[in-house]
Image 1 (spheres, chains in turn blue, purple):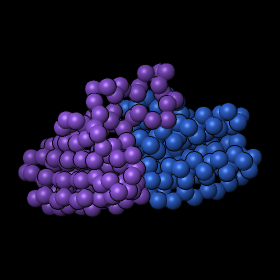
Image 2 (spheres, chains in turn blue, purple):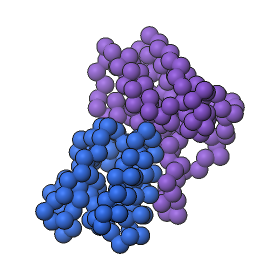
Image 3 (cartoon, chains in turn purple, orange):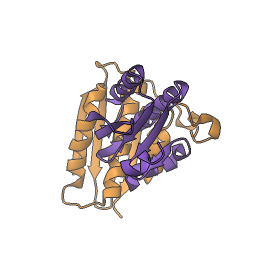
Length: 111
Length: 133
């Protein structure tokens, strides 16, 4: 389980979730995003192309992060969800809350 | 085949326990990626609920996992040492006003990912069934 951050030339901070996003590491993701916000980042993309599964705590962390980013005038997008991961967002209706792109290239368009 | 584990309420153990039980349950079977995903998310969720809500993340309290791997189905039992709860009191978290709540989706996911879900009174033990076909 790891979170890797990289800055795209367009100014978007990309956070890759490798492994799982679950109750055991969700605080780490929240801290990573908070640190980015504190550093002035306002365009954030969380990419799940290397993610195995997400539990409800992980989904909850994304909801909290989304709210925090919005409150600070930023924008959060998600990308790289495979069919299984996307089904979790659809089941919980969170697909209506997030901007979800197929991959990072698509997510970066117009960001 | 059956596997039984007794683990302390440490959420950092969840991923490892899920993989251990998955390896045991999937031995000699080649389930689809979708089935494996449903299994892993539901078990991860049940363990998290047991540790966090059932046992209050008290490491001295344990969670028992028992997986029965039958020819037609997997039955996964997860039991905590807490007082239990009434699963009927947990409402679905998909109403528009609830979407931004940071919690409350765990049981909903389990119910939607598994083929059958039952609780044993007083609600501190869940049995999740995943059919093989």
